[in-house]
Image 1 (spheres, rainbow, N blue to C red):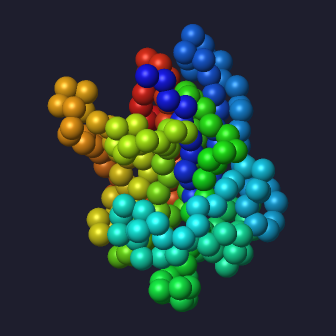
Image 2: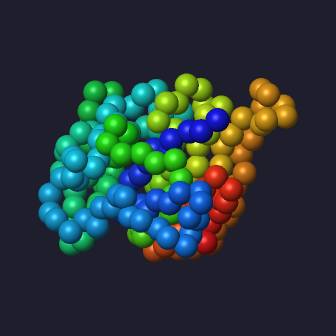
Length: 199
């Protein structure tokens, strides 16, 4: 079943696309944000997911805001996502959750990410991909390009969440520990009809 992938990204993303016939010989850039402007993230490329949505499946304690410069802004060539201790509704923290949903999506591609990530218990910076038409998780799949889970300090995770084809009701997660104690990273992911992997 072909799924069109959608970015749910919170940091710099450069996306290039290919066809399955071309593979890596001929990449054509179809989307990027180089963050060469100042202000709020470019609304032609990014949407905000707002609220808490019951903790987004991860027991998250923050409230995600929309177009609030204190939580999401571009300056000095970087997208900055900032969590802040401040009260909104019943939540004591705010942050931003940026997605390309309803702006752009691709089925296959080469994704390049350059990021500086925070550390600390309670933090969970992540860059991931979902299908355009999520009906049930993990049945429709999720690719975590990068996660730095606060309770597992110093490890960068790359994971694939899927419903096991053989055991129809079981959730399978394959995790690769990319590295320890990192503050800056550069990741390339290839996803095609026949080839998947990290470079």
